[in-house]
Structures are given as C-alpha cells and as structure tokens.
Image 1 (cartoon, rainbow over the protein chains, first blue to last red):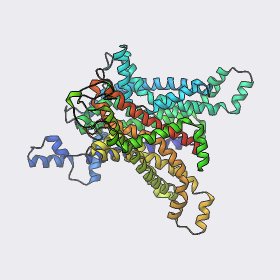
Image 2: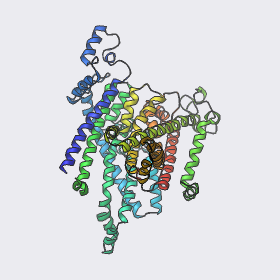
Image 3: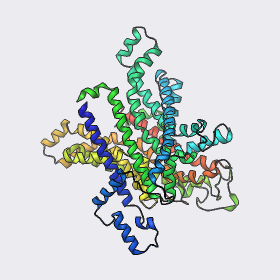
Image 4: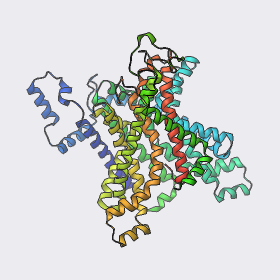
Length: 309
Length: 278
C-alpha cells in the first residue's frame, strides 16, 4: 500500500508538471505578440525589446518554460489585460462560488441518480425501468446550455417560481436552477451505472443467501447489494467532477453565476488570454487533485487494491 | 458480424431501427440542404422579423428575419461534418498510437501512455477551449481542438485490447510463419480491434457533436453569420422570453441528433460486445 501511495504521488507531480507544459505551449501559440498585447502596439521599439527580455521571450523554449513554472508555482498566473487585476486573485474569489454550485449539482445528481437507478434495477423490465432508461438517454444527450435556457423559460418566466439568474444574497433558491442544469448529465450517467452495477450484484449468490435467510427485500438491497454496487458509482461521481468544470463554463454563463466558468467565458469574449489560460490551468490542476482523492477513496473502499502490492 | 443476425437483432430493437432511419434522413438533409431549405439561411428580411412558427416559417424567424428552419437544416451540415470528421480522425489516430503502445511495449508504451494520461488529465471542454482560443476561429480550429482532445480515450482503449491480443495464438502463429511486426500489427491485430472501435465511435460521436455545439455557443466555433446550432442558441439568447422558438428548435436539433447516435451506439454495444463498458 505504501508503494502504491508513493507511486500515486509521483504520478500526481508528473501530471501537474505535464499540464503546466501544455498550458505553456498553448500560451506560446496564442495569436498576436504577447509583448504588444501587454503594452499596446504603439510602444517604442526599445521598450518592446526590454519587456521581451524581461519576459524571457528571447530565450530557448525550455528556459522559458522554467520561467513560466517559477511564475506558476509562486502563484503568478498573470494579470488580466482588461481589468488589470491578478488572475489568481480573481480565481480565488470566484472558485468558492463554483464549488458551491458544483457541490449542489453533485448532490442533486447523486441523489436522483442513485434513487432512480436503484428503483429501475429493482423493477427491471417494468414501465418505470423503461421510462427511466429513456430519461437517462435524454439526459446524456442534452446540451447543457440549452437545458439551462429552457428551464429558465419554464420555471422563471412561464411559471415564475425561481429567480432566472444571479446569486442573490446566497439564498438556496438561486442555486436550484443552475445546480439541476449542471447536474443533469451526470445524473443520467449515475442512473445507468447504478442500474447496471446493482443488477450485477443482485445476481450474486450471496444475495440469494441473504434473501433465503429471511431478510426483507428492502434490507437486502440497502444493506447488502447497494453497498457493494457503490464502488463503480463513486468512481463515476468522482471522475465526473471534470464534467462539472466543463459544464460550469456553460451553466454559469447562462445563469449569471459569478464563478470560475463565467470568468473564463468573459475572458474568451474579450480575448483576455491570461484569464482564459489561467482558468484552464487551475481547472486542470483541480481536476488532477480530485482524481487523486478519488483514487485514495477507492483505496479505502476496495481492500483488494490494498492487498495487491 | 453476419448480416442475418444483425438484421434479426435490429428487428427486436425498434428504437435502434428508428434512430438509424433518422440518422440517414439527417445525413441526406445535410447533403441536400440547398434543395430542401425553404429560404436562404443567410438572407436578412426586414419584413419578417421575429415571426412565430407558422405555415410560412415552420420554425419561425429570428431577429434578422432569417428563416430558422433553413438555418437549422444548414446547421446540420456543420454539426454532422464535425461529428464524423472528428470521430474518424481521432479514432484513426487513437488506433495507430494505441496499437503501437500496446504491441511494442517498452519505451514507446511509456511515452504514449504519458501523453494519453496528460490529455485525460484535463477536463475535456476546458482543454478544447484552451486549444481553440490559441487558434484562429473557424471550422478548422473546432476540428483540431476536438481531435486533439478526443484521440486519447480511443488510444487508451485500443492499447488495452492490443496488450491482451498480442499474447494470443494467432499472433504467435503469424510470428512463426515470419510476418514482420508491422504486418502483424496492421493486418492481424488492428482488424481484430475493429468491432470495439465501431462501438466506441458510435458512442462518442454524440459527445463530439455536443462539444462542437458548446464551442459554437461560446463563440469559439464556426463564426456567424454561418448557422450552427450552438451559435443560434447563443446569439438568440436575449429573445428567450419574447421569441423562445429561436432557441428551442436549434436546441432540439442538437438533442435529437445526439440522442439517436447514443441509442444506436448502445444498440451496437449490446450487439457486438455486451461486456464492454464505455
């Protein structure tokens, strides 16, 4: 287990280095001269040269990468062309909002997904099962941004129940629409995996044993089956966190949620490259860490991995 | 894959047949767009601004008086083209790279696996955004961004399969009769990966179409006035309350397209390889 942990941490570090290299290459290939972008096109040639040297743009690629790494690890992701504020400060301020939204979405997706999936597995082949399958197929195929707009049209304008956008003073009612929009894709996947994983477990001999020793069906499903079916579900929920980062870009824009995703989109609209690249890097770093923690949870839940080394 | 059993399976699965038919209709529609669309998708008409759906304009018109149905029909061209092109390229690339890694093992494998893991370390849309911001906007930028992100899962899948295939007897037999490694790889091993690849492709094409629509929605895809489903939803957002048809129809087009590809993918998976979990 110790070997596994050390190896996993090494991989974590390598991956983090890797994603910084990718964003570095992306920044290098951005359109336009970064120096001009920084000081405007009318600057004197001497100033341009000086800043080029300061940025290290005249050095070989790997040296430049080292410079970039130094910047990133000291927490400098550049400043926004547009607002002149530090990208990292902006991200820090906004990431909590995104987490709040993502967490609510995850809760929504897990609860509805596991509930519906269990119901479908238990009543396999019934009307509930079929309708559920259709809903989950639809949920996977929905464009998030369109779903958001449609929900807004229905629940804020036609039936004015929920606020159409913004965050209010942090009331939960503002979370409902964005969180269910963000969670719907994931919920659809969780329904599917819960159903198939539970069906697999339910066909095991120990379930028959538990039933034949007189336990009720509900008890068997809750205590014996669901617990063992949970592993692939948890993996999916964890791995799907990346899709929340993807989805938050679209959801936050639609609902005016002041998070990282909307920040990135504003960056895209204004061609504010440090903002976009800073968000891409930070998002990827978070994703890598989340996967790392999912692996740790896995280690805790599945004794087989602990024994393997 | 015998045709008779395939047809037997299809008969038992009306959903798959329906979606296959719809896909063919959509592809035909995309090809024949200039013939089928009732209006020019680009022509601005100040006499017919924001008209609700009617017999003259089945899907209504947008804020510039353009016919939404015509724009949705033309939009199918770009969504399907990108969907197929990205799937084909990323699968081809994924197969070759994954097969090399799985067959030759050693250093090749380590480097390729690192590359795969690196791409998969990013949230996919975020990386696609990063790539398409760095490229001049247009159809090529969407294509490149989605392909550069999309090959990795295929490569990982194929690598795993090739790792186990290379230990099979038919590979030993091919070695004994003196086949070169490349011949074994391309003529013996890769053809054996094809059924799984077809399943993976049909399951992924929908998500590529969704990603294309998301990039278009963000203004990173094909640029207006060229109609794409994603950009139609995005540009008409301000009219959500007053003229919802401008948004509902392009969105429905995305959803139906992705849904039928997913249904077909599920069917192919159950038919070709029930144990596969993608």
